[in-house]
Image (tube, rainbow, N blue to C red; front, side):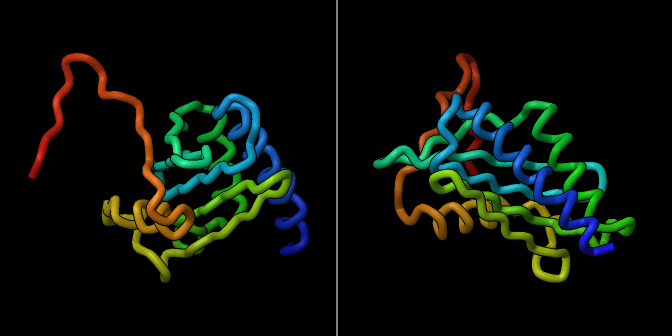
Length: 142
């Protein structure tokens, strides 16, 4: 059974890489995807190393979400036995996937510091560039 899961997961992870390449406009080298997921929700964050900067890309397409759900459901029939964090990177033509499970990280508690820590571990102090805020919006500060 475990072998069947791995046989299905490999091509699924490849499909995720193809979708990520499409989202960033073609060249997948330098992509980093950070995902937190739980029963009924998914929060992907997509970045790409562009040399002196790291650029954020909008990962909100349905195709990526569906692929992530497929990978999550493949893990187990029990939600508490599935991974809760996926880190997916592409260097050159190879992808690397790291999974964390609920006993390692509690994603039911919203914490943007986890994503920020993953970014810093991956890219160090490189500045992260986000798109400008839409006209008419404002930033709330604590």
